[in-house]
Length: 448
Length: 70
Image 1 (tube, rainbow over the protein chains, first blue to last red):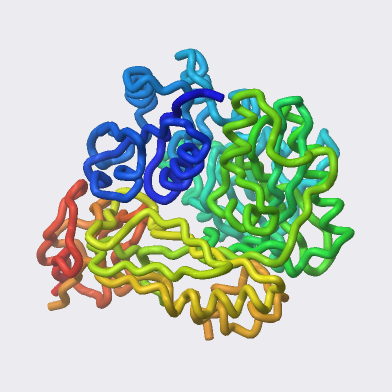
Image 2: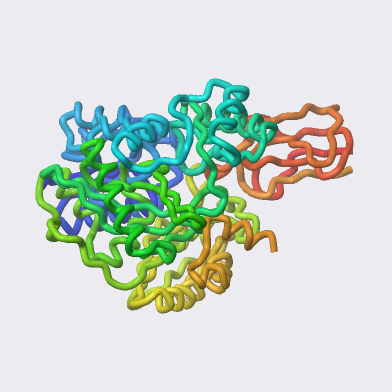
């Protein structure tokens, strides 16, 4: 095992990675910008290096600077977390070229999955189901209209290099498509540096279900169960649970096999997530995209399997075997739920940066909180609004929901608006409680 | 006279109108950016933009004046 790791990230995920690194005896080196100097992860790391101004381009997205810092601090490896440079094949390659261990898949796997059009084509060739959609970038709005007549409305317009739901929208007719195309293109250029757009058949009643995979050091790819991520606002996840209440045993087995095929098709190493849509009307599932990194919602899988995914990432990157028997299906017990606590108003979900005057996390059996902030810290406008992930683990779904209700009530944050009141509302929503919900749930909650 | 104020701390990403422009109810005046989200700021009544208090690249605080429409 390598002796030290630089964590090229911030907030809750930096803290999460530091925790496992320290437990494994790996020296954890954190980096921080102006905005983040007083956050808990900076204190908890074995060493913390100041890297620059708050704007991500001047700090967490500056790959040359990060590699320089890693070298000077004597780091043997780099863990990218999620977001920022985690899915940059160029950064992964630069880390490797600098003689450091990259804690993630081979840059070629990142590159192949990073372009959604290329990934779709690759998955289709590997025998993984994909929705009808573009096999090549769509040149302009008129070409999009032509493509939509082939695919059939409604269609989803997406940035080929995109992620996080940014710039994505559904169109139900030609006029809406032209406007969605222009919006998607401008956001794609701005946020992802590539104007390439694809269309995909839009499934109005769908669940968003993803499979956790691990590519082992010996080349095998295994699946560790699914997570249901259908509670979304603005195409971004707000709550996730495992097992999915909408996935039968036979569908689960087909999805897990397809996810393994997807990983094998790119020679995947480390932790990755294969995201799919499940059509609630037909029961079919379709490949959406693969996230070639640790996923935000990985804790729910950890809770039901008892496996520390970050530890497996370290072991695999070091060429060592994982901590469990990978030759048999992994045991899973109980039900886990993650609620993302965001700095945003709970009605319209608008950002609400500001100082945190009070911060008191719930605790107790079956409760896990992965947080990035504390009382006396400030949430700035520079980064995403994730404050904490409140996770619960119960013997049954009903028990998990009940635990979650009391944990939400016990989570006290003051000084800024959070979406904790939304989570209280969600946990009492009959559709959510029934388990029979889809990705339209949150907008239905806000229409009534 | 309608005062348009910022709902949160944000960067001013785009300013889409100039002083003297005529706007309709619902027109986008400015696009703010905060926490990786774009937030369009809309006119709430028809009128003329009499005063613009922000420029692209500015940081506005919660409740800070963005524009006046008369």
